[in-house]
Amino acid sequence: MSNEPDRPRAEQPRHEPEIIPPGEQARGRGGFESIFIHVEEGPDGIRRMSLKRPGPFSIVLILLGIGLAVALFFVVLSAVVLLWIPVLIAGILFAMFSSAGRQYWSRLQDWWRGGR
Image 1 (cartoon, helix red, strand yellow):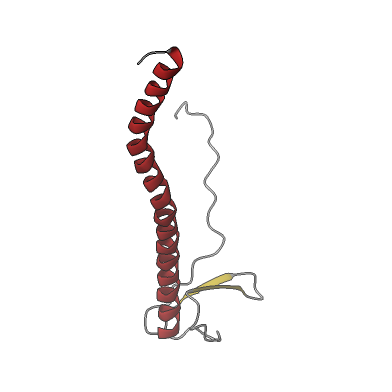
Image 2 (cartoon, rainbow, N blue to C red):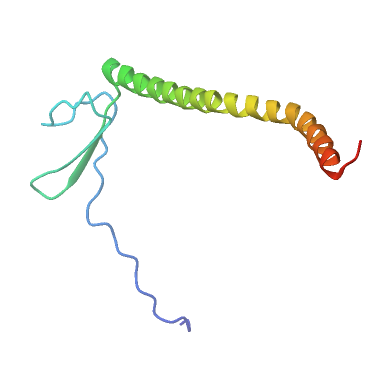
C-alpha cells in the first residue's frame, strides 16, 4: 500500500485516428487539389483531415505572391532612398555654406561694432 494521494486518471481518447497509408484513395471524399489541408466533419461527428500535394497552379500562385511581396519591398526601399537624396544634398549644401555664412556674419558684427 502506498501513501500517495488519489490522482485523477488520465482520460482515454474517445476515437482512434484514422491513418490512411500512402497511395490509397480516401473513401468517398471529393478532390481538393487546389488546397493543401481540408478538414471535414462527417455525419458521425468525426473530423477528417486530408493533406494534398500542391499542384502546378498553386505553386505558381505562391511564387507570384512571393514575387509581389519582394517587388513591393523594393518599391518602398527605392522611395525611401529617393526621399533621402534631397535631404542629403540639403545637408551637404548647408555644411558648405555654413562656414561662409559664419565668416560673413562675423564681418557684419565687426562692422556694426565699428571695427575695421
